[in-house]
Amino acid sequence: MEIMEEPLAARGVEVVLPEDVLAEILRRLPPRSLAALRCVCTDWRSTIDSHRLLRADLLPLSLAGIFIDFWGLRFPDFFSRPPPTPISGVFDFFPLEEGPDIMDHCNGLFLLFSLLVVNPATQRWACLPPLPSHSTELEFRFLYDQGLIVFDPIVSPQYEVFMIPFVNPGQYCIERTDLVLKESEWPPSPLILHVFSSVAERWEERSFVREGDSAGTVAYAQRQCHLDKRGNFYWRGALYVNSYFLMRISISDGSYQVIHHPIEVYKSRPHVYFGKSEKGVYLASLTIDGRLSIWVLDESCGQFKWVLEHQNNLKPLLLRLNRSKQVYGPWILRDINYHLYSQKFPGEWNLYNQNYDPSHFHSPNDEAPTENNFEWHSDDDDIVDNQCNSEERNSGDYLTFLGFHPYKEVVFMSSGSMKGFAYHLKSSKLQCLGNLYPKHYEHFAEHEHICQSFPYTPCWVDELPETSISVDNLCQD
Image 1 (cartoon, rainbow, N blue to C red):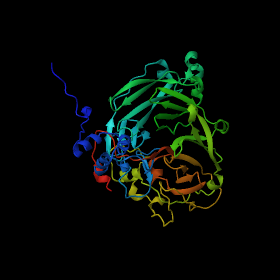
Image 2: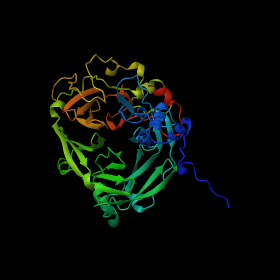
Image 3: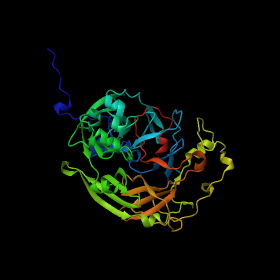
Image 4: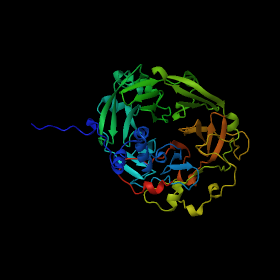
């Protein structure tokens, strides 16, 4: 009979791995695990630090700028502090027939409507397989899907894509729809979602059971389809989906909750935006007359309650806006579409002005920015108060949301697609960041407005297959 010998560790014999072998093992762990292992012993901490295995500069822990999708422009533009920066902001490193229309962003990865997942920092990308077809009459007749990407490189370099259903009247009038379908509860329980996993490399169905009441019926949801659905995001293991309510999808336990807006929002019917920031989940509302309100979601004790954090009347600031004058600041718009068109970037350009030639037109953007005293940076603790160089006069201009700063209590706004602003909640100060009007925009598009925007936190760690750039070359100490 063969006697099995116990492992050395089981017999109390200390096993010491060569440092290179230990480093190779530790290299496969996610940052959160590496951070915990640094506290185990001095040898492990020395190995992790000497081999630079835990690098915060590679993680999405800082704001680089804001990607903005302008109506009628082929490429999204990038609003940020001027170069030098390793982020070019140009989505030209992967195959595309038309424009790279952005569907969602999470911690440095973008999901495009063409079902591409791209990383502008590493210039890697991956193509997802086609979505499964609709399987129920409700899905076929009344729903459309919007994809949300989940990526947390502190936990894992893998990602998932969730297709979230929204009610859309489409060609079916509410009065003519099937009575049973029309009175069905929305969202349903269980809620069946198509989910793509980069680990399994396929779409699969996952079931999420509702905790608590529904938001209403399909017919009621159809009547709310005009509301803005921007401001979807992932935070601490849950997806937050903006509809005429906030849906919180807990990924780990297969449940979801319907969280209604504060009652004040229903009364005034303002423009509403959701986002994550310093204290967690935020709701911002802005009425047509400039009244800003900010709520923070309290999720303690298993309950969900909106707590009013900030209120201010922005009308006095709106009166200072002057759309007819150029505004410069510490941030610039990269004018990506102008530069790519001038360089004859291949593909179809559907210009509003078919006779447009960049060399024959002059715009205010051609002028060099004047000297200024702006001292604000996205990661600074303070934001200086600033008067935009415009006349203080009555103006028909307006403010809309660009997004929340993910780590500071700052709301980014735009004024009629012309100027970018940072509003600091703690000091109630507004700073003009700079011009937001794309160069020669009037020749590219008939209408001029912002469709959507994404505060961007670059990440240099991913598992995307294609690459044409070296991370080590870009992330030098």
